[in-house]
Length: 474
Image 1: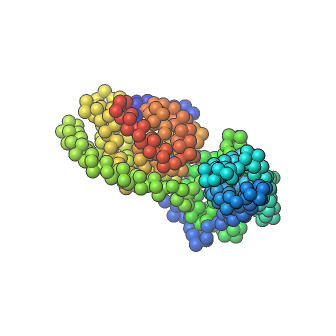
Image 2: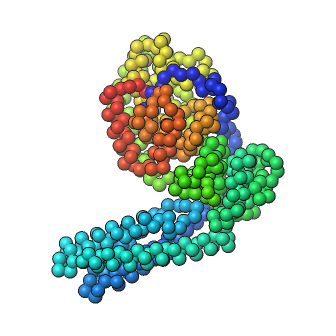
Image 3: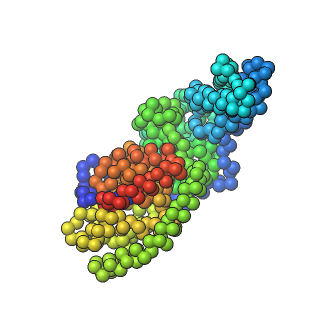
């Protein structure tokens, strides 16, 4: 949970732009892309699976006749460890995954040796046999995977994936020109989507598309299947457009034209990139949602007497208007109404929307200050979680004004909106509450998203509960 303190509004500081990157609510109405297109087919995993199983078979054949008895077990263990969902990457290669493949093969042979020794010590595999089997399978596996990737690269060279580049015209033109100069990427830009043409043609003579109709025409005529979103701030500014493209079957990639590629595992023509999950549910999102419903529903039932007491005391001590409602920005730039117990009364709506916080105001009553210090004022957000506006764990939601400011000022801030916002998060349990670095918060939030797991959510919830025992404010 977040702790806020009184600081000047960022809008009053030099260097901040007043331009908002939050899309207008009516902006999505003009995007009517063909939703009936089947989603782009990912590369079939069967060739890689065949190469892995064939390599396991070759590795087993390297053993002597008596040692081949556990052949079926070897194939089973090797195929089980090697077969796993492959990370979607713009262009994959055998050298990129060499350490992972070798480590999995080594684990497979160690597991095989342990099983055989436990089952029949008389036929235990010697160290020489294990090393020989590992070496032969590793060589065969890498050779087989290299053939698969080579065929895929040649197919992409013959027929690259048509792509649109979305972003500021100058940056988009630079990225498009670089990708066109490197055909081995397997992506061929066919147009640039920007608010203003800024000179007419894009990189490599590509047309600049400024209306939804032009984008739709390019989408259909060229069979576009990939979208390159240049600069993280565009992720929020063009949220409706990117979601419409994703729903029409396109794969959306976020390309950072300003970050060197060595800062990222994935790169495209030397630019850092990552895939954005906009059209489909994120892997594991069902489990996260079930956890949200179970925990928030249970806590609302158990804490309902406490919530009622807080509401009654707040009504008696601070007057009418117990519940504080405020617009916040959630996943993919969508706005929602956040609920809290009212602990302060802004002068007007403008102050509520643009002033950073008033947690330390002297006029705040003793009970309101108690709610802040114990984080009890945040408990109403459990209703936001139950309704699906928020999650228990995720980046903290912010007001539209500050999302616009921070997205243009801090690298990676707009990328936080790839996942549902939360009551608590990795940044909060690291002590990043109140008047702390926005850049640090964005970095921890993106690290949480990139390495998300259900167990990580459970750990963050437990650490948050422990922190509430020694309250420092919300």
